[in-house]
Amino acid sequence: MKWSETHHLAATNNSKAKATMSAVDAFSPEEAQLFAEKMFRRRCEGWGDETQALDEVSGWCGMSPRSFKRLMKGEFKDFGLRSYRRVRGAFLDFNLRLIHQLQNEVKAVEEAHGHAPVADIAAKLEALEAEARAAKARVKTYPKPANQR
Image (cartoon, rainbow, N blue to C red):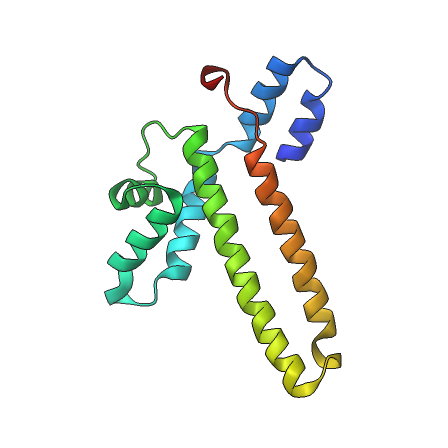
């Protein structure tokens, strides 16, 4: 069940149940691990770049390189909602940067060959950017767990 479906179901209950329901499916340490691995693999340019990539990506997530590496290996002891938000937010920021790079490449093609060859790609990139921004806004509005209120 996706976060939006859980959130919709929880809207019919009281606010305490709403916070519990949406946090249960929206938060997953395994999903954060997947996000961390993907960001690291995409950022790492080669064998000699691993340390620099680890430092950079862990900084995006507000984690130490050691903690980030443990997250990638699945060795998390107490991975909370706050950490999940940071990792997911960093993942969405990273994807937004990739989208902007693609948009710049499409603009270069537009300037060289006109708008027609890449018009559909430009429109899809704009829609993808809007979707990523909406997902980022949802990360900021996840309900706080009861122990953080």
